[in-house]
Image 1 (cartoon, rainbow, N blue to C red):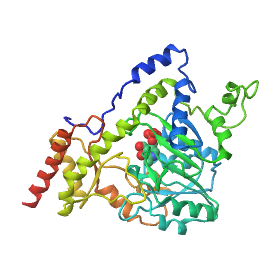
Image 2 (cartoon, rainbow, N blue to C red; image 1 turned 180 degrees about the horizontal axis):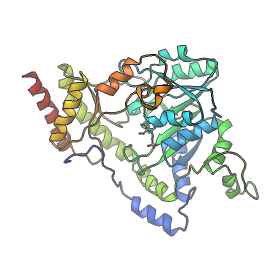
Image 3 (spheres, helix red, strand yellow; image 1 turned 180 degrees about the vertical axis):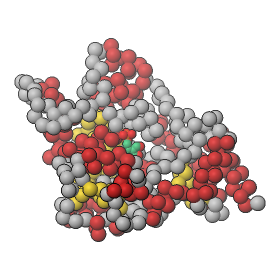
Image 4 (cartoon, rainbow, N blue to C red; image 1 turned 90 degrees about the horizontal axis):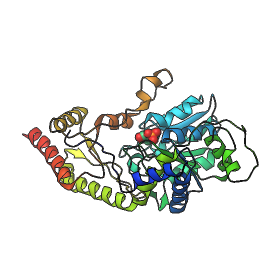
Length: 379
Ligand SMILES: Cc1ncc(COP(=O)(O)O)c(C=O)c1O
């Protein structure tokens, strides 16, 4: 492909920091760069405690353990999300209750949540699609009213804000991804942000294979051992070294991504104004962190043909999530409710190439091919 969908990149010091980590003699977890990254997140966004993980999937699994999710518990989340959002809770035996998307945005429809809450509901998991916030005031008010936990799936939402508050800092727990498609990346990678004091100590134990090893290394206990459940959730310091170099360039990365987003938006708005496509509105309570740019085609056929047209011009556009309620795995568990908006986003949404090194000329080229596609259709 002349223009791939994604391209990982080096922002400057990645290889130098990996070398330094190796030379320091500590490349396992919880090393110097892990601590530097965690402090950076805590200081910049005010998260109470951050723990790097090997993925957002892992961070979500830690949440399911921390909340003691067990057989029979119910967890509410959008159907329009990635499998990982559900996986962590399903593994613990929870029943997933999927909620539909809003009609105007892939995020969960907050107004449908209350009717889904039962005496078994334990948690709500909002997903901030494309880094755009769910209406967290509504969600947190319900959580307070029914005594529920809120886990923000902020996989795509680094450096994005709801009414000025960083996403991932509002729920009891927040989970981030640094997968190579994300704004800040380390190949695979993730982070758990803990915003509730009650979970801090246990999270560290679960992170360190069920041991109090972190306390031991801080000199708080004189030996360490097996004290709880857990797993090996912490990444190598090599991954953290890569991530730290990216964090140092966060402002530059974000400025570049916002410029890419705006070029797409300005170039494609005329097609939206003529009704050929939709560009989803971003609610006024959220910032846009320029994680991805998507169009909504008028029907699934247009979407698939447009993907094919771009592909034949060596430009890789993709669809996104398949509504989880409709998935093969969930068939045996699902209730009879239809979730039409989730299905609509699965069928109509198209993501355009988006990465740091994408040039303005390339974006203009992509836009031109989209315009050609609709010009031919109008003939
Ligand atoms: C909403 C959402 N949650 C979780 C994940 C899983 O992230 P990771 O690949 O870091 O495990 C993704 C992946 O893109 C995602 O989009």
